[in-house]
Image 1 (cartoon, rainbow, N blue to C red):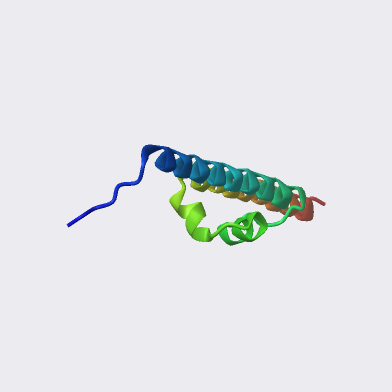
Image 2: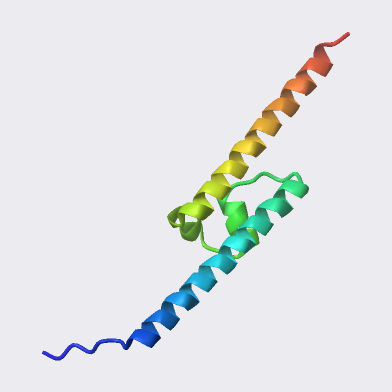
Length: 94
C-alpha cells in the first residue's frame, strides 16, 4: 500500500490560499452588514449570505463570521425595539 504524501511547499501554499479566501469572505461579510445597516434593512443570516456571496453554512461554521452576524442582528433588534417604543410613546402623547 503506497500512500502519496503532499510535499510541504504545496501544503503550505494550499493553506495560505484557503486563509486568503476566508479573509476575503469575512471582509465581504462585514461590508454586507454595513450596507444592510445603512439601508436600514433587516440583518439576517440569509440576507448577509446573499449580499456577501457566501453560503449560510460558511456564516454558521466560521466562528468570526458567526459572531459578527450575531452582533449585527442583536444591534438591529435593539435599535428596532427602541424605535418601536419611541413610536408607541409618540402615539400615546396627547
